[in-house]
Length: 557
Image (cartoon, rainbow, N blue to C red):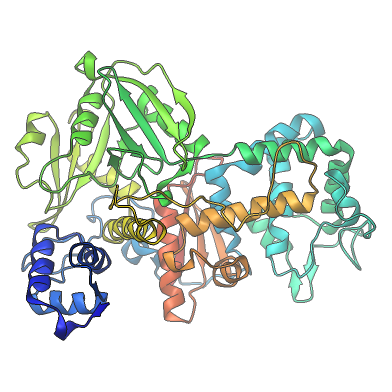
């Protein structure tokens, strides 16, 4: 039963007001869920918002729950923590003096960002290199061309007939050439509207003609079924890590999500916080085994006081008490299955940087007792965020710690709101799918490919079409979970293609970054969705093979 604003009972209004005062980070969606649980009534988000506005409690996320003025969350001018200034931190860039000539369908870079996180094509190309006696980077570019061609507005599949003989029997009886008309004479890959060669070159870094692609398909055919079986194996082995379980010598433990956003007491983590196994493994080795860089998390858990899991984390990373040292790290997937373990872990200090918001931990003396540095990130005389770290000051100044944090998490307010929204969405999925209340905050996630991806199993001979369709759908699913707004979670591929993958853009390569600049959509809501997606990609800290960071922005022009 629904409850309108003017019919809301006084005790429910009091409950809303008290909850927001105690927990300012709660949004209207989460408050609606809490009311449903406590009172058995459905109160709309608009009604809750009206109450908060009436009470002067509708404060933006990331600001103190008091009468403070609005505060900009831009990095300090002296801190060069981002390759872009002003609006760029929110996914926008200022208009350039010479507006770029946009290339069609550069939205495929979202798929490429997902591929860089999972690494299926990369692993397959590396393995295939020894069979074809060709450099792995060149093979990767060719495999990307095969993967993205069907997304570039082509109505028919670019690989038919003999092409599928490289992996199975599908396509038998079809024409032997994967292209029609001008195919085989070396012309650029085209469709009725012009050349896709420029688009592919902007995505893969190579220029290919129809003849080049046909020759590559023939080489796959000569390798035979081994190539498709190899791709199948590599595809299925590109797992995602939902939670890293840190097991200490005294038997206690805590979890960190795959995206390194926060610390958790159990592996009840929203699926949107998973990450590709190879990236998690590399990050863990770099930050914990080799201590080449600190672990930089977005949010610390707990509101009134630090959670036991957080205190275990601090003790483990300080490495001063052998009984609380990290014994091993286990990687778990979304079904709570152990993927692999990382051990032994050196008995030494491991460094970290975490953020806490002004309303967290009113009494922070316990953090100082633990020997942590508390660094206030301020705008003028007002504190926006407190950054805590165990890095010695002689190793990293306060300014350097702030810079490292802001470089890793470029969208403070929007990023934290996204964090809360995904936890709230996780709560709603639990409520919809299971009437049990064993864990009312963090339910069991839905599997990544449930109901949307074509089947692919080891030992089964598949054609090139089937294998690449599988990987394309998996990358699309990854983008839906990690990059795109929640409203696109159930959208089919054609809808996602229309809204994101077909977007025009331009590539701009800098010394430390590669920027994908998208043409700004005319529709305001679509522009907001695109800015959101760019922010999520930037927060994912996606790196190219040459170490450059992948940065997505939207042109204001």
